[in-house]
Length: 452
Ligand SMILES: *Cc1c(COP(=O)(O)O)cnc(C)c1O
Image 1 (cartoon, rainbow, N blue to C red):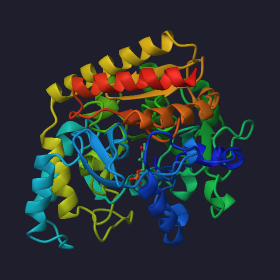
Image 2 (cartoon, rainbow, N blue to C red; image 1 turned 180 degrees about the horizontal axis):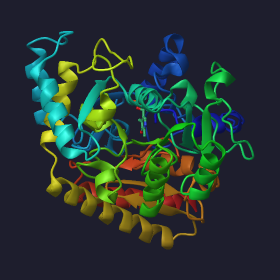
Image 3 (tube, protein in one colour; image 1 turned 180 degrees about the vertical axis):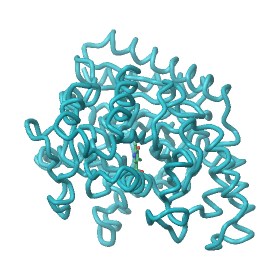
């Protein structure tokens, strides 16, 4: 995420919007000053586009610290945080066990460029938890994980074509930055300058949840598709949950064509279950990408598969992939400390807490005159500002993003931080309690009232 495809899609539209909103009740003087300063040295003042608050016509808040469910800005404002660093912080901010693990490791060195035991511990936990993974390779980001997973699928099958879905975000490898929703065309068009057309002409686009759109592609290229990559529950067009049958059909089709099914569980891995969507839905892919939670808030990604498939990867096999800081001891200690604390009780708690929040918000929506509805699974959800159900990219694009921007702003003024874009997931952590849920519902109520 941090840069979903919609970001580009809406760029033109957003630039036409006149001014950024003013916050009435919040003092954001320091943030504004820092943002101005940051723009002198950093592109757009940020290191990842969505942080700029462009998608909500705003100017970003600079953060001074965060603890549990709370995040504080440089002006001393306190918010209940539902971004959770875009997914990794399932235990909330600066969890004491995670922080102490990082400190303990840091005192013994920050990087060795040689193997250490912590890497085995994390890998063992991943292999034990995620059904499709027998062997794993750590990377430094989710982008690296998906990039390598595609290379692996191509190396293993000897085929070049890959299928991706409109609205799914897999980081920013060139051939996955393909404009979604370009209608009649089957071939992908690059959605960013700097990506040569020849890099994306092996990327085929299908419609999320629509098995016919996938079958058509396999009919056209029965023996040339290396794999299908998908967010098995999508978080990057906002939350969209597919039918289990859809995922099972993808498995069937890839198997039939000796092609590989790649689940990008960078967001959903350890978020919906220890075993991700694949465990929860009982559909086991060939390759799985992980990231976010497995790094416990430090930079990490990973990809894994059966021993047979992973045998392709260097040094066991010919497919090259490497990383100076891969399996970094600090990242491994944060990840291990996080994963160790997760169990079925964690997910039950997250599910119950999120359900309470979502039920409350649905009640508020139904009593308002605003067209909105919620997609939710486990501890992730999105409030879509549209009257129609959001099931794919096309229906997501029907949302009133301006209204979302106004809602986001109202929430901030009432002490709650939601993601600064309509097309992102809200994340609940184990540090969110009844107290925060009630405060949030109060803020949502006031925010909806001010939208009327
Ligand atoms: C966040 C995300 C990525 C990219 O991970 P980075 O660490 O930001 O490179 C890839 N796929 C999905 C599904 C994601 O949510």
